[in-house]
Length: 306
Image (cartoon, rainbow, N blue to C red; front, side, top):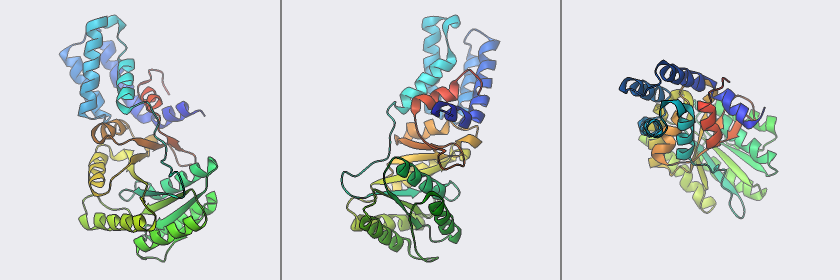
């Protein structure tokens, strides 16, 4: 299955709902009425594209109708082009330090798929011929440590873990030391899940990052926030709060294959200006895909059924 097919299959629920609504609106009346514009706006907001992106698409559709008339307007094409343009056409890969270890902190609330994402990122790096290690810094949940160890065994990625309830900053410190000693290219740090509203937990995350910076200059070099697409626009609140507490460098959006709210990717990127680096389209190790704005937009608005 090619990348575009994976995008289309992953975005099937969002695509089906969105295209069904747009087709219904467009075919009912060739003219662009206030009523049909309102319905189109509701369909786009329903897919969690966000108010700003929705208004941008509506404005572009109006302009197309004014210049081309009702017969020549491809609403799907207009919407797809606006989304792709908004997201930017250059894929944003993982940062890499010019020399030595690159430390990647993987953050987010519980249940978004942080642990799995950390392992999948390590798998991607190794598939590209680089070396990776994992750090189990979610020390509050013994299950998270075990889960990461299992992924490590399965993917043949070394895992540094402390005892249950160990200080996560100490584990991060030891992991950086171990990864540096082994000349690893990347260290992916699975941090504890925390509610974005809990100030004390955010402070602890900041402490973990400070310890990383003392151990390796500039670390963490990449801070990726993992968001669950099924939470829709609530993910935007999470992104706002995490970005305030720790300077995020990019986003990973998981569970896109299980939601009809796949447009939230656009809304978050539009507001925060953070690059979406990867999206999760399934359970397998290679189902974490590098984000491609053009293919995402096409998969979202393609008229052909998936």
